[in-house]
Length: 441
Image (tube, rainbow, N blue to C red; front, side, top):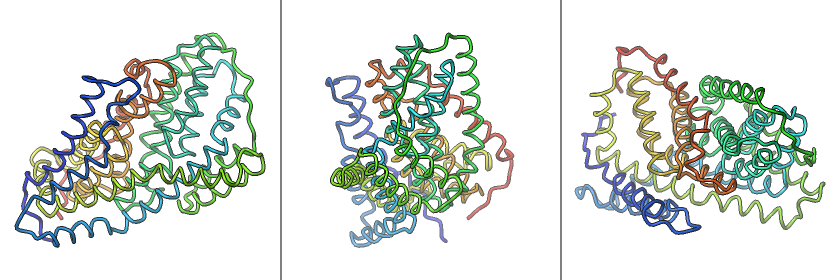
């Protein structure tokens, strides 16, 4: 395939997006904040990308409008983009009915009830890891567990920030590894790899970071007094579907089958226990799907913008820059990591960051012979690291609001994301010799 002529100006749509979204977000969050309004949600990410798409269309006047539409259609019609959109629909329905059925709260309470009281904080971390892996959402996990973590801190005389930060870290661990998380779906489908292969690459980074976090939490807990917490009410029938879904995901069953099975199980559990009515079940699934609409629209817009930028030479410009500064395969992986991290800082949304960075990351991986599963792992992991740290991201903002503290004050207690960043760097340094020969496409 003939390589496009590099053209840095083709990246202008990204700059327009960053100015419109990040610029307004900083202004409304820190310069002119409104009480009760999160600054980074004043300007819709869909609006910002729509303006960026118009900018992309205005570039390269030598191509006709019809040719540009054809480029956009090619990007949107990619098999992996189509699969990703369908999975988003099912994931939304699953998340909606699982939450309405009370499964997350029952699962958390069940696990807390069987843990020694002195291990309450390490227990919160493990529970957050498991629930976010089963739910596929860090925000949903935080929403369920932070009130529990707050109660644990108050009743047990434990540091509130420590308990809440522990939950956020566990939520990011599970979100990063979950087979039904939108970040996993976006990372794997854009790179054309199987979820189980990405999981294997991912677990080698995430598990050591999680074990180190757990060791620190256990050491801190052994030095404190047992927390006087509980009792916890739970329903084993409501909790069981999460464990089944988690087991099905880990053994590698097709994600469509996993999600459909999960929806059916939570519907049955809710109806049997009385936590769901038929009308409520339908409404919750519809609400969950509606909650995915923005992500789906952003995916379509970004696929269109990426196609136009590629045609206009923007991707070639990025690859040219990396060739000049990257030292072999290792440098390519650092390039993917920094690109993804920067996009998450700019968008405050790990899924959106992956969707933006993925097309360029795929070309970098092909250029430098980086395995697709490792590229998907870097996309997912690096976006989750930053999303779990930035004080204006939804995760920390929601956790802080529920706990009645500031999001910035939680940052020193976010052990897992910082440990994960260290292991990512170690993985990259071990992943390729500095002078390894590039694989040219």
